[in-house]
Image (cartoon, rainbow, N blue to C red; front, top):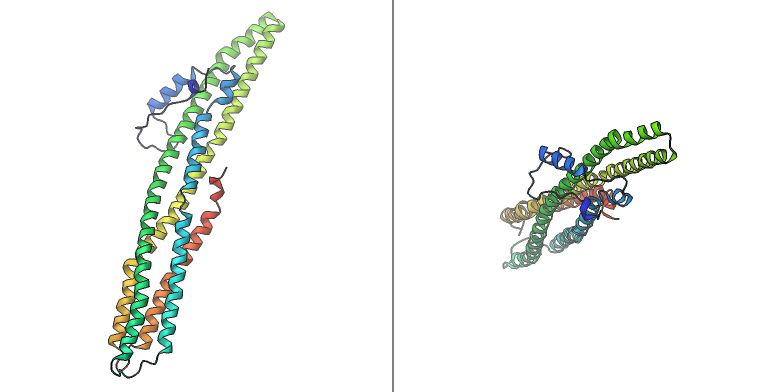
Amino acid sequence: MSENDISLHLDDTYESQKMSDLSETELRYALTFSRSIDVTNKIMVLQYGTEAQRKVRRLSESAHLNIPESDLNEIETLLKKLIRQLDAFAEEYAKTKYQILSSGKALEKFRSQYDAFNSKLTECARRLEILRSALLHHIERMDRYYADYLKIIREYDMYLYAGEECLKEQRRTRLNELMQKAKVSSLMEDAIRAKDFEESCQLFEKKLGDLSLSRELPLQMMTQLKLVQGTDTVMAANLRRLTMDIFPLWRSRIVLAMGKGGESVIDPDLFREANEALKKAVRTVLKEENEKRQAQQKGISLFRF
């Protein structure tokens, strides 16, 4: 019997179910499939369930190739660069003595420095939004991979159920008949036939044990997918918070500091507080991103074969 003849074919339009919770239709199909299994066919036994194993391998390789490591690296680079640019802006301010507004030159100089940094902040926000969109697409892909793994697990369960039912039936009927015949006849050839069939059953039982162990891999992969997805979700939320809340808040604080500057261009305390708040928010995102990635890397080898 060819390899295709021993492959289970699942309906692609299945409804989501809990893992290992086969429907009545699937159980009946697996039971019918079990009657086509020939435990004496060693090629069939060795190939039994390999289609499900191949699907796990292909899917895991695809999931690994789609991890947006370069996007996360760029996010980290952008945020670290933004902190350096903010420090440079603060240093430029510190070098300038903004005291009495003489001919508006001090105000003009500060506005020039502010516009230069604000332009960089705007460009950073634009790029972060693009990267956030990429993370959202990746989160969506992870959901599809997760659903695919659920389907593969159900396929494993059908192979295991069919194999166990076949083995139980063969031992109850065929093996029992051969052993009874050998006992009655006392012929060597009948004893050999019974022993050979019993060894075939044992080989198939070992194959089912191996298949059951192999079933753990997609379960581990699903855990890893959720870890990767969790990192992306946290980062996407943090990027939206930066671009929609933190960056605009910094701008409003600078405007407020200018309005309370009195005879100076800007209130130095408010200016410092605004910069420190922005820097703290960016560093918090960087720290959380680094912690999530470290946790993710502990299990990343699951994607490599």
